[in-house]
Length: 254
Image (cartoon, rainbow, N blue to C red):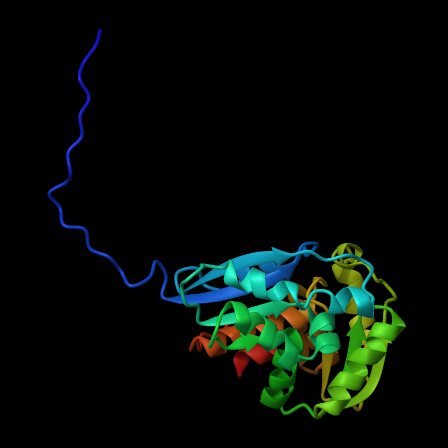
C-alpha cells in the first residue's frame, strides 16, 4: 500500500533566542581527566550556564616537561569550542600546568584561540579564593610528587600567601590521582592542616576533593580551598552568578 509523502513549511514564524543558554563557560581539560567535568556539573546550574568542553593530549607522568608541553595545545582546543562564537569565560583545568607554565602564558595561549575572553586557572582562582576568605597563611596538600609540590609552594609563596607547610601523596599519574579515595583525601587533609594556617589548599583538578570539603571543614574548623572548587567559583563570579552553592565549603558562602 503506497501513499505520497510531502512536507510544507510551517506558517508559524521562527523566533530565535540570543543564546540557547544565557551564559557560556568554555573549559579545556586534559585528555586523561576523570574529575573536572563532574565537578562543574555538580556546582553549575544547567538552566543558567552551559559548560562547553574540549580535551587536549596529555602524557603521564606529571613531570615539568609533560606539563609544559600542554601550553601550545591550548590555542587550538580553545578555538574549537563553539568556533566563531563568543564565550563569557574560558578555563584551563590543570593546576600544576598553570603553575609550571605561568598564568600569563596560559592566558596568551587561550586568548590566541578565544580572543578577548577572560580566563581562569585553578592556581589564579585559588589566589582569589584566599583573598576572599582573608587567608594569609596556608597549609597545602597535593597528590603530586615532591618535585611538583615544591614548584607549587614556590609559586604560591611568590604570589602573596605564606605557605606554612606542604604535604604530598607521591602520585604522579592523574588517572591514579582520580582513584584516590575520599576517605584518604579527608584524612590526609586533616593531617596536613597546620594549627597556625588560616586555610588549607587541596591542589589538583584530578583529585576528587570538592566533594570532601565540607567534611574537612567540619573536622578542622578552617576553610578549605580545592582546585576545582576555586576554579568553578571564579568562573561563576566572572559570569555574574552570585548564587550560594551549599555543600562545597565556606568559599561559596562569600
